[in-house]
Image (cartoon, rainbow, N blue to C red; front, top):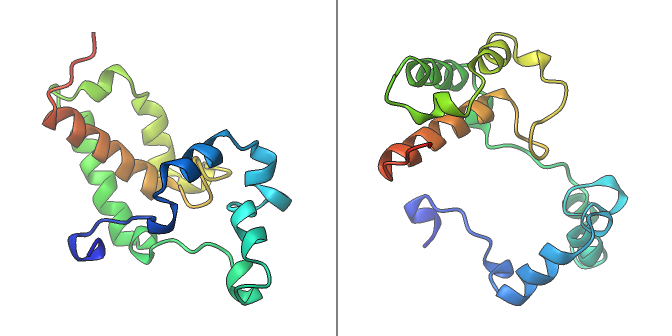
Length: 139
């Protein structure tokens, strides 16, 4: 039902007690062996096949398509040039321009393993959309 509406959910982790426990868990446990989802991987060892437990995360392919990069880059430029966007008060546009023009300059993912330049630009678009929808003002 969730994917039919484009909503990504984590059904096994919906219980608030699990979320609270995981939130308070030390990072060393969460990133066990230096991997994302380390504690989940450890818990599933011997239950799921190793090729599933230890596989590398893979991004949704569309975000690594050059067409996607060009689209989000153009949309972010439009937001930057829009005087009605409140993002100008909180974003360093020169930095955004620099990484947009040279995506390889981002040495490591910004947030999580998969957050490269196209995803950062998409995130900026999402922020702008949210701010506009809720008429957010920065004061």
